[in-house]
Image (cartoon, rainbow, N blue to C red):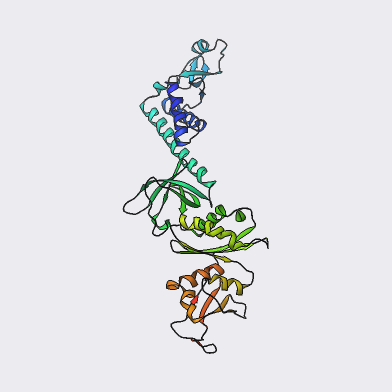
Length: 367
């Protein structure tokens, strides 16, 4: 019986990652609870467990007295000396118990304590499993995909998490059994247990992909300054080189585009613009509006992060992008409010512009 118990605990450790030592402490706690319930509130017990030898014994401490009035707390001198020949009055003697004698209620209480211990152990394992991976990319196995919501239940190591449909890249299809990469954004310990926030749409997901794919970023030679992203469609990433001999854009794109191509494939074809960062806002804003050419950038003389970007008439649509996407991402990347105007001066340079064709975009400086 005892051997089977320890074998079950080892299996539990293997399957759920809950240490045997932890479960033994929960069992000991449950035994004390059971003693208190079965022996009139007496939980002065000693538990001896040896997993290697399969030994599991419980002793209830009782006081040695001349006359027993409360058998749950007291033991006669004669009975005590049958256990320990040197027993004296007022000594504490450990009486070996048979857990089968605990009674139905006590056993139920003990079971509940063990079950709660398993649940707490599982929650603790989830926290440990994910807290070490916060703000990192991990590979995960897709176990289930809800046909109604599209939410995917994934397994990372021995822990489970849910990848909501809204955190999946638009247009990609995830199937059960797939191995995918996800970004662990945060882990929160709530009343209902650990809540793991994972994503494939987070801007830092792209950032971490570049760190893994580009050795110069991993080594600290090239630095990612900011990222702006509309997942499933387009991402802009600003990079800077600490070594004047290293081209930051070239390092990120790779020979024949192999590095950025691998990231595009991971993101199901999402377009990626690699932009060279500059401390000069004029250069940075002009680069951020790529692939459009920029004739000039005029910043607000009052020091506000507002500017006017002038582009050739033929480049206006490209600068703005489909539904304003290119300009919107450029604004987020730089943190500047960008007013895009055609070179012909269609909007007028010296008069207040009230045209409904005027395009302005505000950046929030996503890092």
